[in-house]
Image 1: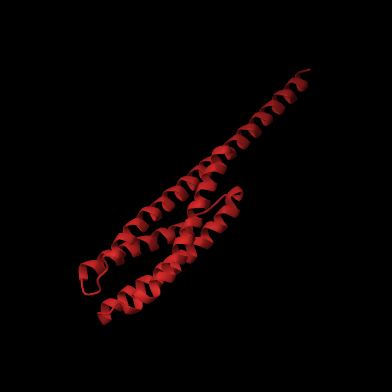
Image 2: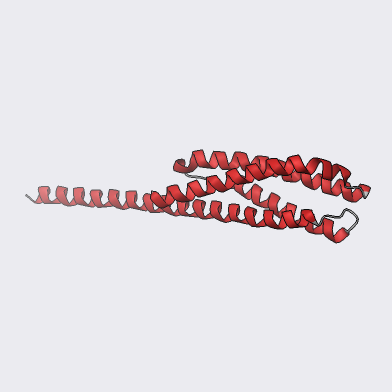
Amino acid sequence: MNVMKRRNVIALILSLLTIFVITGCSAEGIKRNDKYVASVKSLVNDVVNLNRVFNEQDKDFNCHDPESIEKITETMDTLSQRFDSILKLQAENEFREYDQQLKNEAKQALQIITQLRTLVKYSETKLDDKLYQNEKEELIETYKVVCGYMREISSEVQTYWRNA
């Protein structure tokens, strides 16, 4: 009888340890997912807000005004940093598909904003913004579509996690 009680106690202890391990892993996964969702939301919201600033600066862009050039390039640099941060996010398995889509859009947005920045700096060097003005319309239209997709993906990630 004593041996049976010991086996039952050992079995109970092993069962409890298993439950604690499973619960601990699950809690860590939830924390990582919370962090991922919060990061996506924050970074995409930053992009949206920075795009508003960029649009205003673009309206007032003057290649003969060093302050105008400095402001718009600083905004572009900050946007580039946000896209780079999105590319560095680490998603759990359940977010892998969203993450891949978001990173594809971030990569394209980063390429476009880099092209626009290059055109701004070229305008500054040449004191002529004709090339920038000619090229920016098509680039910005594509950029707006890409950023729109990023907002949609961010919303989908948040909705998915809220409903999980």
